[in-house]
Image 1 (cartoon, one colour):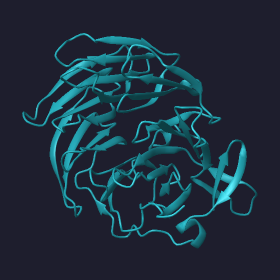
Image 2: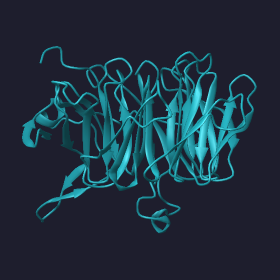
Image 3: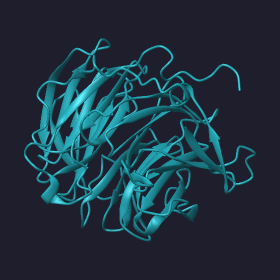
Length: 360
């Protein structure tokens, strides 16, 4: 059963898997060969090719070829001077940008196979994204950092085009079209209209009670989703007068054995399906699920994968769902043992798993 909160009222709604108890099958999921040697912090599919980029705490970015049937092989690898925290593809798929704890962002060119430093901050870069400013003939890169700034970079210049001061450290960031949303420490959410990138359009306090783990913009740029450490997601509209009410729901929680209450796990990733507009959540409980935002129900749930899921993403046509089984550093370095799983898995999305209902 999935419980949603809408306008401060709790209602129960059941979906395909939550009402029947039938979980999806992960037994045929495919393991990506030659995974990173340390925890996986981020992954991203190109929307123009079958390339998958993976960021790791082993100070490397790896690029894999992943075919539609899940066959995969390594294509390229390049290094940072510290753990890599974020990766993002340009809209044409020709370039990849990455940011990390070496306070630098690096650009990898698919044509040359070379990487170069293109951005710098005073502290680690937590998130990197591409965007297209109005009237520009090239995409710019946005970098969000623990130094409490957001910077924009024209890759033809050595200095940032603009720097925006934030209220606190960047924990999560996403961009879709002209919408940029940043989740910072102390539960603050900055919203920026990229037609005026130098100005924070609005700052809100997160409706989640605890730390923000992930921010994902809606595909139509009308709002955004938040995931937090308390096993809850929230969906918010930009237009507060929108008749589609914002809502939040509990997920990635497990009933305690022989005791009241539930064990609560962080939501580490929210990814939207590129065709159906449904979305996935994945968390520290080691499960991922597919949901229908409009119907507000779960379309398919899946069993535990045997370790924390730290990052997820759909490929360009939604036929492959990649998830990283890896330590997420939420409990500090002492829990990152050598025996902890560290792998990238590919789930071939089956008919009906991520589809929306035809009627509401």
